[in-house]
Amino acid sequence: MENRLRLLYALQQVDSGLDELQELKGDLPRVVAALQERLANAQQRKEELERTIKESIVRRDEIDLEIVATKEKIEKYKEQQFQIKTNKQYDALSREIDAAQERITQLAKEIDLVEGRASLAKSDLDQLGPEIEEIQQELGERQAELEQVNKDHEEEELRLNHEREKLVVRLEKADLRTYERIRKAFGGKAVVAVRRNACGGCFKRITPQAMVELRKNSKVMTCEHCGRLLVSDEIVETYSSAL
Image (cartoon, rainbow, N blue to C red; front, top):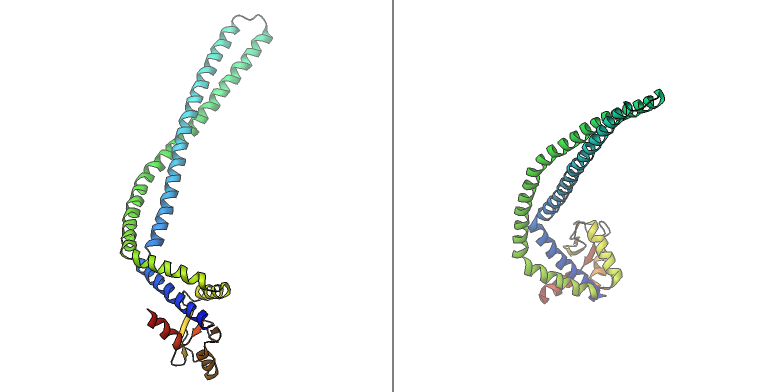
């Protein structure tokens, strides 16, 4: 049991060291991640706008071809009207001409819509360009800052992570689950020493009976006030002397 308590306290010290390194980075990881997301969204929007412009151009060309072809049909129908001999045939061609002219009117309206869509997309794209450049510049600066901080503390972080891996494999799974749950609940501090008969986490007094049990190092004990795991001075001193 005493070894379990030593391992839990050692893991807490390693994690506290990693937490301190993380604090040195400040908001940089979060800022970099947010900028990366903004850049990805902006680039996706740029691709969508470029696709809209391209599709609009293609559609405009298709409409132009159809208008030309429809006008040619109208001329052909008009020529045929001079060659027919019955009113029925003449009326049929007239209806074809009217339908073709109606189609041209519809196509002209669609051209206006297509050109309007393309114009709006181009305007948005022009505004998006400088925004992307601004995000890329800020992201580059922030990434450089973060890389420098990581570089300054790379060896220490690697050492602590390696030490953590060695401790985790030696801990009982139930102890590790309890530790992680409490650590998450209290912002990183799961295992605390008792100082002057008080919890090192919430600083509430520990009862004399609990103090007697704690000094035995015979079971995992938690603070009755905050729920953090408690360790005795002996565990702390043993850890300190081993460094």
